[in-house]
Amino acid sequence: MALKNNVYYKKFLKEPWSYTAGAVVLAALNIGMFASTGKPWGVTSPFATWAAKIYQSMGGHPETWAYFKSAANAEALKNSIWLDLHSVSDIGIIFGALLATLLASQFKIKKIKSVRQVIAAILGGLLMGYGARIAFGCNIGALFSGVASMSLHGWVYMIFIFLGAWAGSKLLVKYFM
Amino acid sequence: MAELRLDCLGEACPVPLLKTQKKMEGMKVGDILVVEIDHSCAMKNVPEWARKEGHNVEIEEVDDGQWEIYIEKTK
Image 1 (cartoon, rainbow over the protein chains, first blue to last red):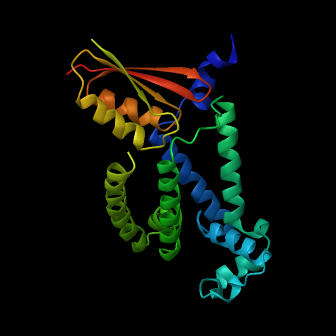
Image 2: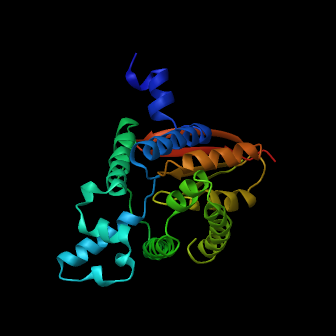
């Protein structure tokens, strides 16, 4: 029997997992990360650090900015990204996603459909990136890890991300569909 | 019993689902909509929505990372 028809291959590698299975795996991994490193999972902080490092390499001085004066951000900027837990986990996510899509035989370079789609992607990316920095985290660092740490800010974040998603979907339907 | 196609290739969530919902509104009972997608999360939320609405759904992988979702409008 060909591998692509194997029932376990289909169940574990080919077909999408249920939301429940995904939630349980994410929770277990976050607990594991917290237990082994003392930090819960986060995603977006390294993006600011990476961009600041690129800016430094071009002669800029992001280390003088208020954001990079905070102890944790200053340290992340000074050290190699390989010493930063979340930088390493972000790189792991990218390669893990590539591996998953290759194992499922679903890798595909997607075409860009329209200029409008490009504008929507850039605007969406800028808004999410800006929001994630002024909120000190994204739906992982602020929401998922926040709620799991029994912090109230995670729940506040949840209310407002729903409002933001509602407003964003209205804009999407109105201008980009 | 018309068969309509909806090209959602290159579109990310939630656009395929929103387009499918809009297109299905204007269709008659018995009509079939073929939604072309290449975004794996749409392969989950489009059939899920259509089944919840009570329509008949079939998914076919037509190429690596590309699918056609057949939705028959039942009501």
